[in-house]
Amino acid sequence: MDIIYKRLTENELDTFIQMRINQLHEEGATEEIDLVPNLEDYYNRHMADGTFVSWIAKDGDKIIGTSGMSFVEKPPYFGCPSGRIGLLSSMFTNPNYRRKGIAKELLSRVVSEAKEYGCGTVQITASDMGVKLYTDFGFKHNGNFMHYKL
Image (tube, rainbow, N blue to C red; front, side, top):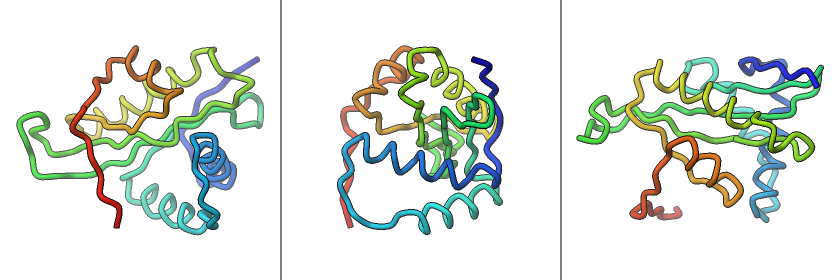
């Protein structure tokens, strides 16, 4: 097994999108809509303007792990004086490659990207499977997180 890590490019986007959809289903999504056009639009726009970065893991030509970091800006607050926030997403490792440190390496790389971008914090809505990875990395729970569906 010869794993290489690299930044996501347009060349890998189709596979990346399919892995994102697989991840959402694995996490329990049941909606039956075609998300591919929306994901293509999002990634193409935000990769182009630098507000989305991703590191992927490959074994040969096969993508076996993904990560993603979207950069957003809010009014500065005491916990994040820059107002810049990294939203972590797309953390997924092929089931045959899990428990080998791949997700931790990908996480480390996208968190570094967030730091370089000037983010003061990184946020994620963690799957049950991901909680241990994020806790071990140093993420803290925020019990007040809420959302309102429009």
